[in-house]
Length: 85
Image 1 (cartoon, rainbow, N blue to C red):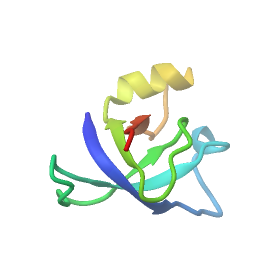
Image 2 (cartoon, rainbow, N blue to C red):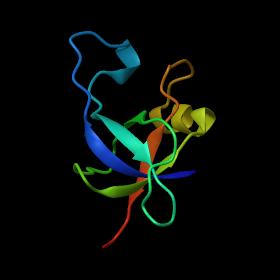
Image 3 (cartoon, rainbow, N blue to C red):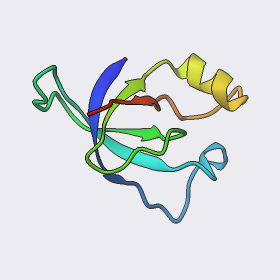
């Protein structure tokens, strides 16, 4: 799992069919002191996180596929939780 900050929304005119209907967010991984770690990642958002929210992301593709009920999808990252402030 990765702790991250929501940086923005992903907008696309075309996407893989398994991504339709899901909100996609750009998420910047951060450390315990909220400093950036590495490159941003894209994640689906079933939790309703907003820009600036601190979140927890799973990178477990198998878990995401089970959640979606789809065997084959390019989605590997999903927001699991939004941290309280």
